[in-house]
Length: 119
Image (cartoon, rainbow, N blue to C red; front, side, top):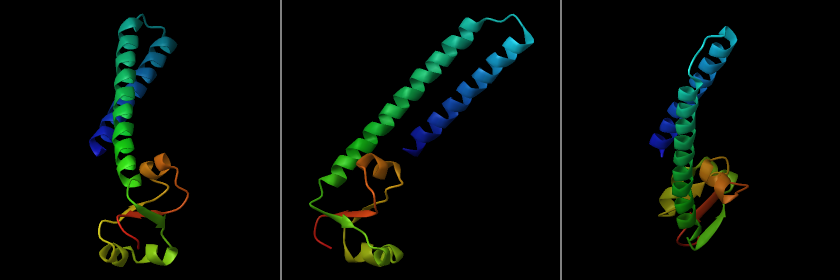
């Protein structure tokens, strides 16, 4: 997942560089082959979109796996303060924060714990 994010960032940076290069060429009035730049921009955009789709599918699979767990409930502030003790007490606990990509995808509004049994 981190590899995909790094690759998306790298490709986005290249795309930004091409856009800046194109603007420089236009402002200087230099004759250049814009078809090559446009073709490279198009390939970068399609690759970025493919990687984003792949990343969202991975997140969707993980979200489905977590949501299939039989028990879930919001984690209290006191439990959040001592998360280590809670994770030791509840084996297999998955905690999802609403500000992470997974939490946003799942539509969470508060920190939620998912487990196989009640906790």
